[in-house]
Length: 349
Image (cartoon, rainbow, N blue to C red; front, top):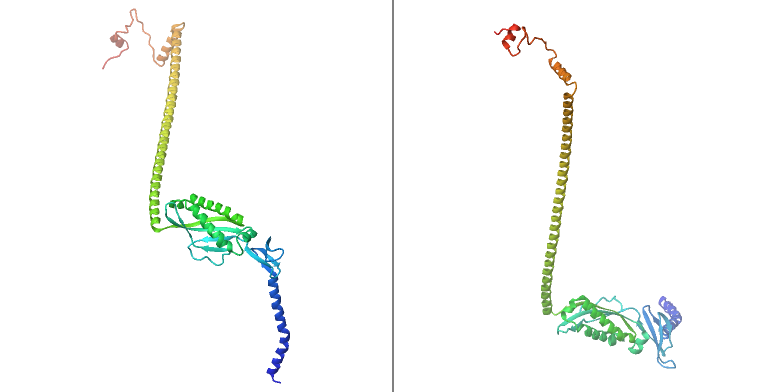
């Protein structure tokens, strides 16, 4: 027997066991998928019975996991449990990795003035009650096209359509309109099992002509505001200069007043010093006068002749004294100088 024949015989013997195993595995997979349903994480499951005693949609919500079904009788409908995003924008198609995102064109809103504004809006919501969604809207993601998108457009046009074109520039007015749209949309979708969490206005665009007119008007308004601000700044600067000048004047007045007080104190001190000096000088002179008066009294009293003699003695101390008679035959007249000269033998040269 050739090698080829031996190989064919070996494969034929193994094939008798291999092919039945493959067929059994296929039957198992088909039976498993028909008898069970896998609810992935981030999903809700709602079971529907097509016929029999429990026919209809069951109220029980199935969490993530594997759930067994009766083949041909029961069916599991899956709904997203995570947040859903409806993005209304004319931008490029968003990235595919963003889960539960539905992108539609931007919303065109006609304002109360008749201008068209293109608004980019993001609506965030979730399936709050899968049973209500299944029974009132339908299976799968039918709720997006039949309820969420049309009702969102309607409520946004209702709330933003009453605004003027310039109101879109006002952040608080724009946010109030978005909050009102969210409130109306929640009132309409909550009974159907959908909960709206956010309505976000991300961007808005006017047509080019109106955009240019708005920008020009805004520039004029900003110029007016700038001039008003400059006028207020100038007024504040004038007030500041006035306060500074008043403060400087007060400082000068207080400085002059202090200087006057110092001069006054100095003059009072000088007057006091002069007064005390004069009083002292007067006291000294009075004392000297009293002393002189006492001396005069003493000289006029008893013993005054002795005191005069003593004084004359002090004057004549060291002088030779000659006593000559002033009367009689040998008397000398002190007024006759020639006689005095002859007596003392004094000759003129």
